Image 1 (cartoon, rainbow, N blue to C red):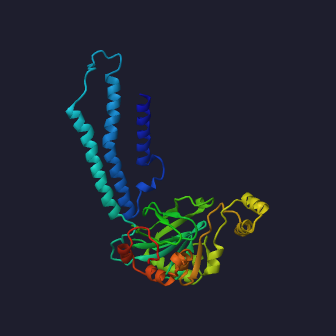
Image 2: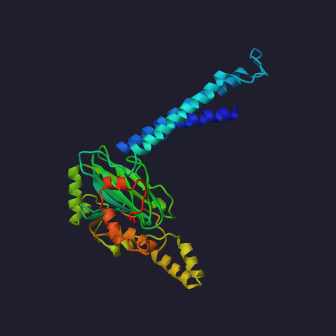
Image 3: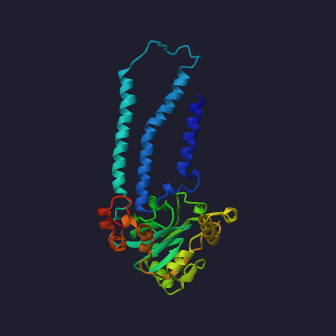
Length: 358
């Protein structure tokens, strides 16, 4: 009986949360077709499973009450062993539900494939995303600008994201607009999203990647097309702070500037211990690197705008981890693959793939 009561309380708590009593339930407050479809898929699966869970809880309570010790009128059948009707119900209904869930899973995995371009009359906006330690860098190759910890795009316009990482694996996630996608060193993954209207949405890394990973937070701004063009013009002119006064405006995002964006991955105590205990040349080198990077940050990196970007920066980040793959230099092949349109990439690459193919 105690387990039954706990199950009822747990279900009640979950129901309260799903109805919004628990605060900002962003997964149930979708602002784009991809996130909305995934949310509907999740809720459909939950409702189907509740077809088994709720009757089971009701029957557990009813059986406990009907066959209580004080009820002398309840039928007592100690030799009862089989009921065809019960067997059909307890096996047939779950099999049907599992079959429906299997079909929904297959259909949803294709319908909401992150590599699948979003159908729209508007051309997609391409944005290259680099997971850096510990921040997100967004490069707009068509506009030749870049940002740190902020992404802007026009409303009702497909956004084609190309993602990679300059350190360990991370997970890029804007829950109001799409599902998560991994960003991995030496590889390129794709994510397509679209915002139905203007708004500001939270984005973050949902995969632990080090001490400072909790600071990998950014804002996604869906704006009107006119506001987006105005923002691009302001950033290119070195006047991005007129749009966002809290941002930092810089000139060129080149290799030197990119290298300076890396944060440390250790606390100051760990760095001091590394320096103090370093004996071998390798240990001294690692300690010197950690000391140069400094301790990990306790606050997100400020939003930063760059008026221009060094050509091929995104490709160079991938090639840095792939240049010696099987002893060959794949730089030229990588650049060709990275320039392929999203629709072609979806045909050629069905899952997270290396941007360099042999």
